[in-house]
Length: 314
Image (tube, rainbow, N blue to C red; front, side):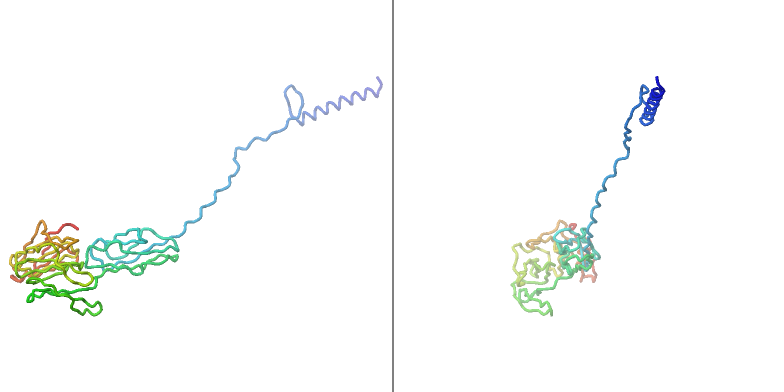
């Protein structure tokens, strides 16, 4: 072997060994001691990718209350409405507010759904309609007051008649309307709804009922017969709800109590039909709420507080 051949063989072994070492160094150790190249695969991450946040809902549109005041109310039964709904019972004078607020730009209309049971008061609404202008409404006014008188009646004992008059709403002046023939009239009273007139008689005919024509004020005898009161009835009263009538018995020292038919005005005795008074009762008055009655007695100069007048619960 020549010197050149020996050198070439050694150089070849050295180069092969170097390549092997390089491959082992690059690929890492492998089974069986063989060198090789193995790609490195990164481990998967345990943290999920960030999600896109949900958009926030738009803010709710502002709403505004509808409120006001009630004055002059007597009794129970008054119910207000807003936009023909949202019923609101009113128990007393003072502030009120509907339960359902309204959005800006919405309209509102406050109205009376039902009046108080006390018929001597009629409630009306002022400042009750409009449009919500991005602010609460707090100036609605509900005013309850005695309705204006339209007719007046006078018993004429000497001429056996009852005269009807119209009442001027501005001046209160009377203008004669019609005259109705009534036998031996003495005292009379008008129910608080202005629909019926009750007239007592000095001839023992008891108490008769008449209906009122709401347009003219004319009287018409109703079909029901007169009711007996036992003697002349000078004092007469219909309670403020229009459901009960009371007539004093001048000779019998009693107050007689009757139910009033809401449709016809006819009278019928209550289950407990009378209450004792002082001597020779002559006049009677019922308080504005219908809870108490007071009787003036001419025989002994007293006033009887007849708080036990029989009447059903309202």
